[in-house]
Amino acid sequence: MKLTYNFLLLFALVVLFSCSKTEENVSLEPPTAEITVDRLVRKASLRNQIIPFSIITEDGNNVTDIATFYVDGIAIEGNTFSSETIGEFEVYGVYLDEGIETTTNTESFAVIIPKRKVVIEDYTGTWCGFCPRVVAAVETVHQVTDDVAVVAIHETANSNPDPMHFSQVQDLKDAFGVDGLPAARVNRTTNWDTPYDLDDITNMAGSDVDFAIAINSETTGNELLVKVELVYENGSETGDRLVVYLLESGVVHSQTNYFNSDETSPFYQLGNPIPDFVHNDALRNSLTQILGDDISGTPALETYSRSFSLMLPSEYNEENLSIVAMVVSEDNTARNAQFAEINEDKEYQ
Image 1: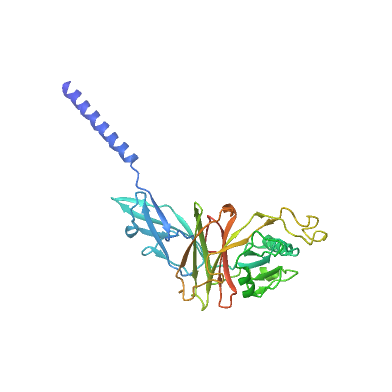
Image 2: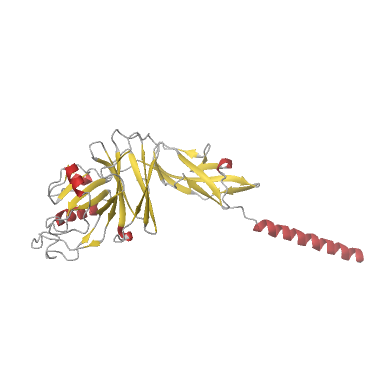
């Protein structure tokens, strides 16, 4: 009887210990890790551009060197990938940590052919009664394509100050042959005159180009930090320059209106002046030289990166600020552009 009791007690202890170990194994979870598509977490790259991957564990360890990466489910050699084929891709990594196999999250990215964004510049003034017609033309463009970057360059009249007056407006007028308002330019150097034919814009907007621009910005207090990147598929051309402008939209100010009696105008019977006219895309600051900074000599498929900082004046409304970046050729013609709101990370497109 005593032997039987001891045997049962031993059996119970074995079962208890086994259950305890099973419970421990069930609750054991491998460490988590995040995969990063290149160092700036870019979600798009050009054809044949090298895309590096890395893995940082939850506790901050870099395990890239001991990981195997899978693109669309196929293991690749090393931690870089490139493709001459455009499309959407997915990547994840697998590595061993203290004998435990860990699979990261899956990250998506794209290989693209960049699309052209057309630059429209509107030389204007709040005192200029004919200037609203360019605003109407720009609004029509926005209805048919998003592939435009608009810059409104304001000038004060002697008897009628414009609160959005750009201090270097005369430099731009001289460079681009502007001798009266209103004046509109396409890609900086081509006149866009009445009747402001949409085909002048849409025939170029969204067409294939060989380089892309990305913009990232953030504010810290009243300091604006901007980072602009670009990558060429075939390398830069002699004389290429980067132009980066700070714009402000949503500025409410009266606008002289010579179309108040014109029944065909969208400004018909809105008043002269229009008391609460909303001005958008007003050029506030140039972060580069006004006609751009030299970037010629940038090799193919290598990222060119430039950072800027600016203390924002108190009269600017941060929520309405945006950035336009463009690459211009030796003759000042805009070859491509990108735009982004402040605190937005705008990818290559």
